[in-house]
Image 1 (cartoon, chains in turn brown, green):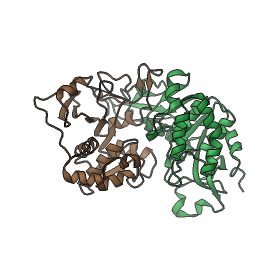
Image 2 (cartoon, rainbow over the protein chains, first blue to last red):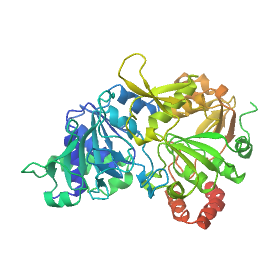
Image 3 (cartoon, rainbow over the protein chains, first blue to last red):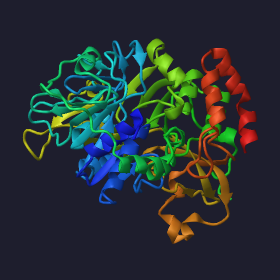
Image 4 (cartoon, one colour):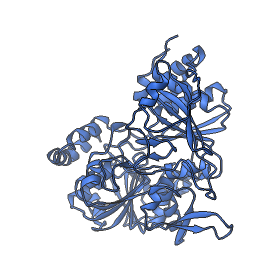
Length: 241
Length: 274
């Protein structure tokens, strides 16, 4: 059964969320949102998903602060962050390139990353563009640090980095990514060519598991309808049943 | 009729002096765009704009019009529509001061103010460049446990909170629905200015099912009627974004001439949508 790159990413996210009790999805995150809703669908409602910007899939009633308060209390198991730049120690930059504050390129800002990265146990970094422009040796501005010194309160942190080319897992004690799987059509050499940082690579890297027929059917019906409430344009671009 | 409810939009906007710290909500919470138009009409200058916790088209327009001296925010973006053009350009070129924050820090500092506290601790942040560039934030040792450094933030007490909601009553109470951010802003600010779609004769506090979503009048300095007052932004589930108008802003705001044209077309666009 053929599938799109977007469908591969949605299913990869759903697999990364297995075992979570409560997954939150931030603003401007249609693929993570669809992945989280698919994860919930797969475990038959055994997972709560809170999609910011949604009314139907968001039970928060205490304003914007409730996500941050519940994260600090350990009530959120997984969250998603991105980055204009991401480096090999999983530092992320959402502010801009060059010097600060008057740099070369200015991006929107750090949002909640400088806090949630420290408190949510399973933060999944998601950035579809996998190029040396994004995957850099060292970020120009640390919106949120990948690792902290001993003694800093930090129950949370980076878990995985999912891109349009591959899935990397982060080892917090070694401060390094390891290549976990490569998407269909990619090679390890190509991924190295497009990555500005070093990462560990086992001798034999498997292909990223492709979506099975049941997952594709769910994405093309239930999940498409559910995500359309928050991201109508994104949903319109997904294949139908 | 309460004297502070149902004043005109231009009188409400005139209450904000140059140089004020003005707290405004994120795009989806009820942005007082019509009041923003009136602020620009009287050429407000030198604002310390506090975005709670992020800004969008309102912040971008205020920056484009030269009304902002300092912007304090976790982000400025127009979401699915794209980057905010003036924010993106001015942060590179102009003398506008940026105080980069993170969403929970904006909330926490406002919560300190609503409790009358001088400061509040917040987790996270240690090791970030966000913290490094905030000379007004400090790291202290947790006084109750050794070896636990934690960030403390000074309270943020805005001079004004400004937002738009569907409904107020003639007693000055304001319905804020599920948008608890608006409560926090009003509790923290010295003065709160509200624009609404409608003003009812019923006292909103009389209905127990709704009373928990009502900002009581003693926080509210002035209310003005502004039908379609969030245009071109959505107001909750009352009306959606005017997508064409927002796209037109992005197209026009590529040049200063285009930006001026957007400002001149604004009243007509708002009326057409109402």
